[in-house]
Image (cartoon, rainbow, N blue to C red; front, side, top):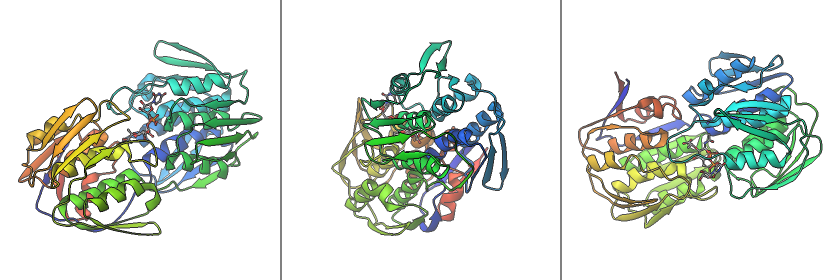
Length: 417
Ligand code: EPZ
């Protein structure tokens, strides 16, 4: 099994382009089945989750070809509306094929999704929304059998904001004759990017990015060439790495407004943050000041996906920080390994109390999920000696060779067998 080996002692310097957003691409790949023509996506990174979504598209009968980082998807001849457990079980993104296939075929049979092991990952909000649209759903043998022949537009209010459920309902109603109104929607940039993609194909999705989204169904959706937004979590991860090492790093291809809550906290830690158009430059001091507290929330609050990186930053900052993880109940799994590296962290349910130390010590550790694994890499940038991180496949789900990116910025990191 591949590992990453990191050595500390290097401040990160230089400039890096943020790759395209994984969490924007996943629903857009599912939505490509709605085009009556060809969908071309530019600058598609080689994440494992993207590869798995492409395998699902091919299993449905779509023709998918790649030319470098450009992907061509031709769904004209898809004739299957079934997503197998084998293909759907490893990623959370497979669940949004429900909405897309129901729109295309008025039926779907999709396995329960997988996703990072960050706590319970219910899908009740997805199913309540689809049922409100008149979809009949039978849950049997680990599959969701959906019949959408009696679907009707409606007004539906989510009990709580959910990125995936909002995306699923948009996909399910975009070709449903009439007006569907969704309330208490997720406002994440990845929801907005899906709406922009669908509207470029001829859909009428209004209000994405606000809590109320109105979808006016259209009869068909045409071909489109599209470039998704930059990955705000990848960008935030590398800016946090610069903060941990006391470096000076600029990330481009990322809109600062997608990371405002993160940039504000990095500034409070004593970093100098300068933004211009789609560029963010962070210049760090030698050692960051600890934040008094970090509470994760839905956009535009502090993103849960940045919590692991900040846990490593707080572990080496000056002072004490209380971290409250409000979205997932299993997002502190990397704490035992951080403690093994010398961090002073106490976890009680969804709270972590961190007392920063100046230097961690390198150790052999294991990634438990995508962002926790990236957090351990960041801790290794500070730790004395070598840190090896195994289960690298978790990190590869959302970073396209993290070692290559960090090496460009001057880190001593390599992938070893
Ligand atoms: C998306 O997951 C992202 N994944 C996650 O990123 C991200 O952490 C999450 O949004 C929150 O921003 C993708 O986009 C593929 P939610 P999603 O539905 O859609 C609860 C990463 O590292 N909930 O917005 O599954 C849920 O338990 C991944 O890139 C229900 O209760 O998240 C959570 O507490 C990890 N019922 C809250 O809502 C449901 O039916 C928000 O979850 C659905 C969700």
